[in-house]
Image: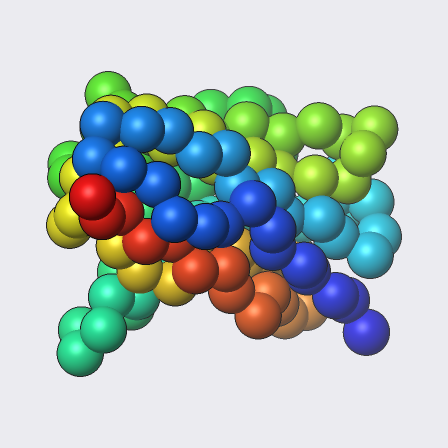
Length: 115
């Protein structure tokens, strides 16, 4: 059973930054892709960013240029650096890992952007 644990969420003022972490219970080398998603109140879950095993990344247009996804293989952790946050970024943020057998989700971490 794979466990993904997100952390790093919290309350931040508009224009501020946060770094989210997603720690896996096994080596992230085993995952083909690692994603970040988010779900705002009353809205569907939306894709935010992806990093594939070779290191390539891609982002939703709404976060491109502000968010950066990265991975630390030694720590079995994927990160989401979020800069220039605005209230529209308020959501629960989830990481998702995919291997050849299944898809795994974390429990989410709340990010609230408010003055």
